Length: 231
Image (cartoon, rainbow, N blue to C red; front, side, top):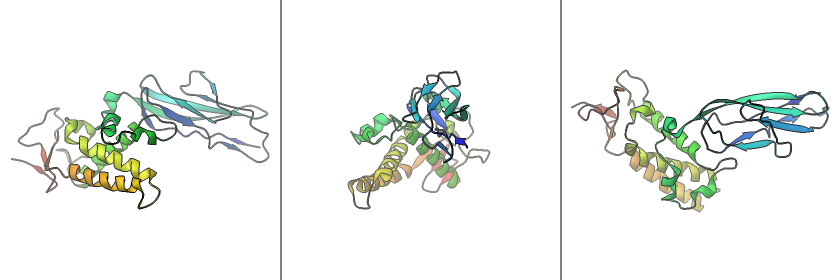
């Protein structure tokens, strides 16, 4: 007889952003007694919440830090537990390139498409940021040590804001489209085109030497040649 608790959590979330602590993939062996209790403790402080029916807990962490989440399953004997870790960051630390408010300017009801267990697209903005930095790396736009750029090198988010928000909109409609010719596919194609146009802007000013300031004479990436322009 065996109990197999399983906890699926987001690796990184912002403080006060809704996230789902998901235990729905937990299971028991066929010869195990029926589950009588499922509880989740979101921050290892004995703040147990009973979730036997839903098997998940929607939560928002109030402070930054590494949080250990615990799920506990009980049948007819001693409970069995499993844990997961969530890194909670502030919005300032996250330093994302775009926001939900900017998405709404283009799609007034876009928040209707937020997936279950969340109340924002902050996770998509974070993914867009990662993809932007990866694209710069793949196109050989590196810092002065030859390393992949970090988000801290983008001192002015306006440089990448359109790129980020249109990439997020592309990802949203790509995820919810049902067929190649439905309205969501049309929207995905529209925002793909807008994202590519924003990505291919003439130049991108980057803090290549990590000094905290942009030297306009040396710290410009020419997006047409994919190289660092040194004048």
